Amino acid sequence: MTIQTPYYLMDMAALRRNMETVARLREMSGAKALLALKCFATWSVFDLMRDYMDGTTSSSLYELRLGREKFGKETHAYSVAWADHEIDEAIGYADKIIFNSLSQLDRFGERAAHIGRGLRLNPRFSTSGFDLADPARPFSRLGEWDMDRLSAARDRIDGVMIHYNCENSDFDLFSTQLDRIEGDFGAFLKQLDWVSLGGGIHFTGEGYPLDRLADRLKAFSDRLGGQVYLEPGEASITGTATLEVSVLDILDVGKQIAIVDSSIEAHMLDLLIYRETAKLPQTGAHAYQIAGKTCLAGDIFGEGRFPKPLTIGDRISIADAAGYTMVKKNWFNGVNMPSIAIRDEDGTIRLVRSFTYDDYRDSLS
Ligand SMILES: *Cc1c(COP(=O)(O)O)cnc(C)c1O
Image (cartoon, rainbow, N blue to C red; front, side):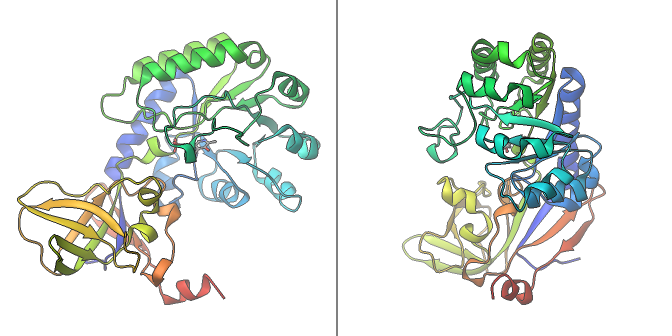
C-alpha cells in the first residue's frame, strides 16, 4: 500500500525492543513505570505498550482522561494547576493525584482524600542544560522545596513526585544526584509510601548500564521503604518512529536545497524550539539542505547526504519522530497534517489516521 506523504511511521518492532527494556528494569528494580503522555500519546500503539508498563501519568485533564480511557491500569494525575471546574472530573479518572503546590493541595486536597495524594518536590537541581526545560531554573514554579511547607503537607499526602532529569544518559550523574536527594530529603521521604522520580532517564539508549540503574533504584527504595515510580516519556519511545516526507522541489541557490512536503515548525516543532537539526540520512556524496514548505524563512530540517542526486518525488525518512513530535503537530501555514501509520512486526504497513481539510477548518472557527 502506498500512503501519501507526509506521515509519521511507528515501528512496532522497535517499540517492543524499548518496552522489553522497560519491563526488564521494572523486574530488576521493583520500580513501576508510567508512560508520560505529554511526550507521546499515540494511543493506537497502547495495546502493545500496556503489557510492559504500569500505566500513565499526565499534565492536564485531557491527558489524564486519555490515559484512563485508552491505556488503563494505574493512572496518575499531575497538573501545574488544576481549575475549580476540572478538579472533580480529574479525581474521577485518577488513582493518584499529584499537586504542584501546597496551595493547590490546600484548595483541593480534601476532595481527593479517597485516592492517593502527592505533592511535587523540586530538589532545586536538574540535569537540563536548557533554561526553557529546567525545572530548577530561578524562580521555578514547579514544585515545593521548603521543608516547612513540605512538613505542612505531610499528613495529607502519601507520596511525592520529583522530576529533575532531562535526557540524562549519564548513570553516575543520576546516582550522585539521587544521593543528594537522599541527603536533603531522605528523612521526609521515609515517612511516605511512594516516591516518583519522574522521567528523563535515558535508560533505553545504546550502552546504558541498566543493571546499575536497577540496583541503584532498588537501594533507594529499600532505604526509604516505599514504592518507586519512574515516568519515562522519551525513553519509552526513543527511535520508534520516523517522519516520511517527499521532495517537492529542488533549488540551487549556491547550495542545493530540497523542499519537502512537511515543515519543521508544524511537524517537528521541538527541533526548532531547542535549535537542533533533524536526523537525516548521512551516507553518500550528494549533499542537500532539507527544508520545509512553509513561508517561514528558517523552516529547515537540516543537512542530509544521499547516495544519488535527489529528484522530485523522492522519499526521505527523518528519524526520531515519536517523542515530543507527534503531540506537538499543528496546522501552521495550513500544511497537510502528517497521517499516522504503523509498521507491524511482520513488516506490513497500515494507515491508522489521516487528516483532511475539514480537520484544519474545524481547528478554528
Ligand atoms: C516531561 C515529564 C516526564 C517525561 O519526561 P521524559 O524526559 O520524556 O522522560 C515525566 N514526568 C514529568 C513530571 C514530566 O514533566
